[in-house]
Length: 119
Length: 108
Image (cartoon, rainbow over all chains, first blue to last red):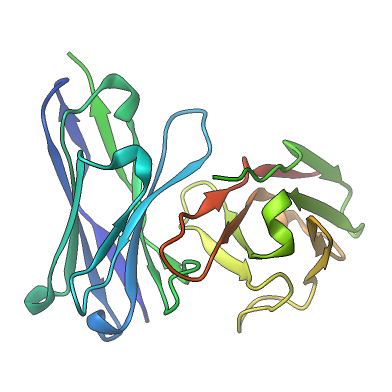
């Protein structure tokens, strides 16, 4: 079955960077887009962007342009999101999700990674 | 980008029908997708392209679209349906996803 296993919780100071991983199994990694979505405490879901694991091509939400980088390592079926210049309002649960082509939605989700930004 | 509006909460008794709406101007041109989120569990896709049910999803779940509003209908609501439901839309390529604020379904 499809599994997306994310890395563990992180605590970072303002201004630092965080990198979260998403290890995929149960399907051919390069056949599906990986999306990243976050949810701040008490807030709704916020889409951050996607990466095409086959080509490495990315699309980032405008709100995160210049601060976010999505990459992948096809040899270990793992996608990454790195967010720099962390602020307190980046405190959130970060989810990876798998979706088909065209990249209009997610078919499966990871369990989420809590990132806390605090001085 | 556009916005999607959902009611914050819906409450129904077991066996009744729950209807959760998702409204937005872009929905005349974009499909809606619905996700169910229960505490401690991953999000689950329960409806795609307004009214298509993925395999494994109960027939009690259905979707419909009219103008700028898409509706998720849950018939014969059961305790296990209690969750937060999110709608989401997107264009085909190079367009951002937009989520509704989520609707907390409470089974009385």
